[in-house]
Image (cartoon, rainbow, N blue to C red; front, side, top):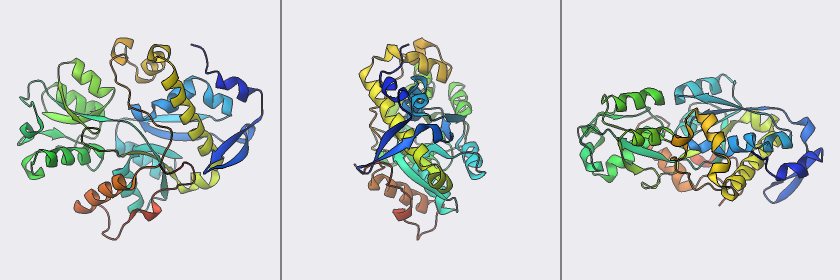
Length: 316
């Protein structure tokens, strides 16, 4: 696979320009520190990994270590211990972490989509069929939040649905496959795997108007690795440019290797409508805050004013 042509212009120099809030600064690529970014296996971080596989981050002089997790709780534990500079997570978790003492900032939103998948033997054909069913969630995360939004759309009270906490995504998929739960939200590639096996997609977070995944960094990383974070975002944007300007079959091997899946499966995964890095919308932040307050997971006086660091990308 040919490397992205952009690399040539970067390799020939020892520095590059980064535009931040309309102002340009020169960054010496030989002085950049490495970044440790925690990720859940989903389509949210695909532009990052495409940038890495295409050599874009190498050309920028930035080493990015993607540390993969199968549960949000494991990712958060490592973040709290300071083993990660940042993470791709969801707004509910970012808000809950900050409200409970973690020094962090959200720097951009992500574009991943989750799908509500009903088991093929569950008898569920539409949202209203979820009443009295077992809907697996990872408690207090986007899957839990999205399940409550879906139930509200179907006029079903949450008390009328059993929501077992199954934090590890692979276990949740296995339980759906075995009929131990009736439905659950999954990101891709897990949603596509389930659909290939005959299970049914009822709705997506996009259908429900949910935009709740985001990239956060610790305040220490923002202070000590400011240039690195800007280079990371530059690479993300260039990764999206590559995705949009090249047929999927030219970079499908990246997904196949990264997800450890056959090309035949990866070909069926729909791509989100990726956008260049931008901030999460206030309405999406407020929706997550309201839900967390109802569940009494954050203080009543918490507000969003200190959640987002807007210095890295422009407000849409």
